[in-house]
Amino acid sequence: MSRRPPRGEYIETDTGNKVARKATLVGTQNIILGGKTVIQPEVMIRGDLVRSVQSASAASSSGASANNTAVSIGRYCFLSRASCLRPSGRFYKGAFTYMPLRMGDHVFVGHGSVVQAASVGSHVHIGARVVVGELAIIKDYVRVLDDSIIPPNMVIPSFSIVAGQPARVIGEVPEGGHEAFELRDLYKTVGNNPHPVPT
Picture 1 (cartoon, one colour):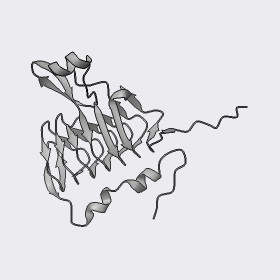
Picture 2 (cartoon, helix red, strand yellow):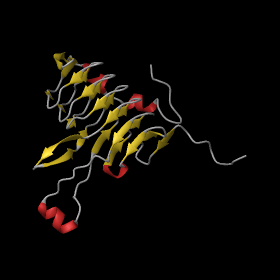
Picture 3 (cartoon, helix red, strand yellow):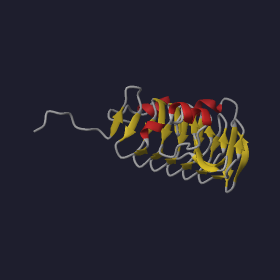
């Protein structure tokens, strides 16, 4: 009989991130987690898709790009089961390269969603089975409803409700509805020692 404590379903980091053992993070050296982020099982984050084009000065001085961040995730983000985050790809100065994906704080990504945006602001709720196209920009306090498809390069303004295939703005987040974007309580319900949902 082993004296080691049993391994939990989640790995908890020093900064409070909870990463499921069954999640797939490729290129972890290129992924930045801001802290207190939950990554559920079957989530895939593609940190191996990094910018390949270097400036002449950076290439000559260090031999490598100064900033190789592929995916940057803020605090209190929640990546639901089977979701995927991957940087956008495009041609830049005659060569194919990947642009970094930046995600703000308090972002919820629903079950089975694929996010390839250039940036996702803070306090954003992305529903289940959503596809966010390449180089899309989602501003702060946006709610993307389930099964939406956001086309590439679309810019979604702050305080919008978005739905459809292709997605379009169908409404505004109501005044006083901003508290629904807070994910601190949801963070506490996940992990090796979860707390009950507050009522």
